[in-house]
Amino acid sequence: MIGVGPRGQNVGKFFAQRIVDTGRLPLFCFFVAFIVTFVGVRINVRLIRAKVRWWFKNVQVGDLHIHHVVFGVVLMLIGGVTALSISDAYTVWYAAAATVFGIGAALVLDEFALILHLRDVYWMEEGRASVDAVFIAIAMTGLILVGVRPMGFSDVHDLGPDRAVPLGVFLLVLANLLLNLALAIITLFKGKIWTGLLGLFLPMVLLVSAVRLARPGSPWARWRYRPETRKLRRALRREERLRRPLIRVKIWVQEFIAGRHDLISPDHRWRSRR
Image 1 (cartoon, rainbow, N blue to C red):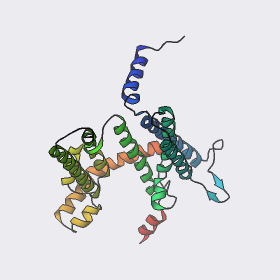
Image 2: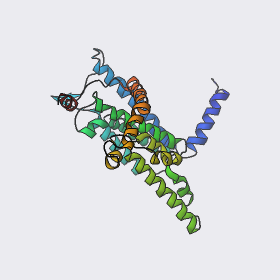
Image 3: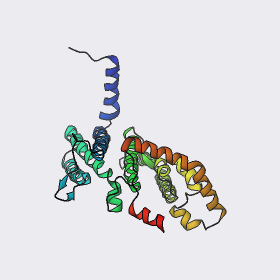
Image 4: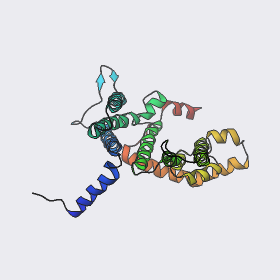
């Protein structure tokens, strides 16, 4: 009989204490299923794009190309309804439903850009929005999985109905929650998507990003920065000097994982000819 070494026992103990005992097993199953499905789908579509003879082809019904977002919606419906129908006492079945939901969610978000633009932009520049959506989902789920709660929701949870707390304390926690939410909205309007989402878990990031300059082209810049003003010029210089290199690195990582989005959409081609 093969025994389990001390390292394996430590890992199992850690998993039991941090995942199983805290009730996060369904979330863990969702997280793993989501990542594995996304990686598997991207390998599949890259092989299909390369026209490898021994690999699968696109699912076609006549001239109709059935995108995998369709299968994702069906799996999300099955997993979601099943999870709502199962008692929390049946942890294993609840985790199985979460796994099905995670598979479906990965299939849907992998074609998020198609839903957003209502046309097939999978390998076009707009298709990077799908990879952004997947990365955001993985980051947010991972933070929640390790026990980080957004915007002070842990404090609200501690003030449950079975715990008598002074009204002043409750109002203070609620005011902090609303302030963080307002800062997050301002940050998102300033075009700082990743910073805004990270700030939901680290409120100090929201405070800094909300008072700094908005990105050019963001709703906040269009509303507040007039043409040829000092703020707009500073925002443009900062975008070119700081954000462009970071965006290039992000695109390199995305394309290393998900494939190269090198097709120019007809809309962009038409604008370039004007």
